[in-house]
Length: 596
Image (cartoon, rainbow, N blue to C red; front, side, top):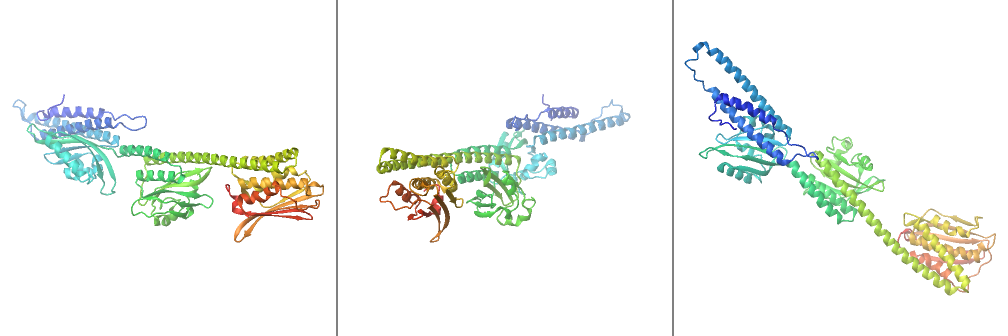
């Protein structure tokens, strides 16, 4: 039962105060959900109960004090002056107990609101225009806590409301006061000192007397900034996931992730850069930035800005909340502040075990990251890494399919040409079968060489050695010499076939047809007309005298058109008394290219 404060006696009021103290202290805090967040509805209901009880308690104490100020009437049978000291001592004792109980009640109420971490209460005396509020509520609106406890005009709290929301909230307050009705609004607060914006949900009720005269307006406000940010970030992660699924380029994926972080963390600049981990440089791509913020697109050396690249190389996210205080950047603060960086966040992208790209977020003003901020950064980073992995896998699949199609077409065309020319020029079917089989075997070995590697290039020494191994009898009659050069797949296939033809002719008619003969094969690089070139020389020695053939067969045409036909260049034959010499020259860039 609720006591009628205006008709109760002082003793009844004191008893009611004690009862309210117990009720307020017994109200539990909102239970925690498994994810650690409190249920907002429960928190609001509990806070409203506490605020209403606190307001009721305040009124009880006020009336009790008014009753104390008025002298009690004495009874004629009271015994006169003899009982006056005893009554005065008893009254003083009761007043001390009442004051102690009041202080304990206020402490318990303050502890309950403080423990909530996001609740503030107010009680507005409408007739006197005095708002009494707890320290948390006062702090939310930028009002001094001691002044709020003593009571201040409502205007001081209204001034803490964001200017864009102030007219709407003022109108809602006026409506509640005029009608004696409920008040429930979501609005923003703007800090005059820091400029930070926070969101609150405020609920209260205006109470009028029987004549409609406004009396009191108690209520509670809940800081909903974290809740709103959490919901906004959940939506941002969903939007980012949908956006990333439509992207395939690593740069576009990284930029989308950086933009999502910047918009939610209210940064001044964000983007991504392509990293050279050996040179420790980064090429910053066109960045997202606030109006008035300069772009940092272009080449940068990590060491010019500090030592945090060491953390990035280990795959660790770097967060530096003050470049002048962090030991990784303190010595380079001037370089960072020159390009508008006071706070930086870097998320490394690791591919094949190497630091290959970086997502960055910059602030040009001091900023502290909350645990919620860091969780959001990690979530965005995880999504970006997953999508980059997907993009890389799809890219590898496309390359493999393209390579398979390309090589299959080339192989079928080469087999068709070899078979057609071999059958056309062979004197009989037995010779045709043997020649065709050897040529296809050489082609197969060249394919095995390339398909056995993870890259689409091969070392020329491996190509030459494997191709000529079958033609050497183990006496080292074929001597090889030249530098290591990575050559493309098409060049490797053509070179393997050319060397097979030259070696086959040497075994049949040239230096390898006699025991004392041999072959010197050398290759090198040089410059011709300002462009790098590749040179290969086949020189036979110690063989029988050779003569220029009376007709040019497929083998000769394959040698002349094989490598030069694929990559450009020239072939020269010379039939010297000591043996055949063949010189091949082609552009080095074309020789090295994976696809020609």
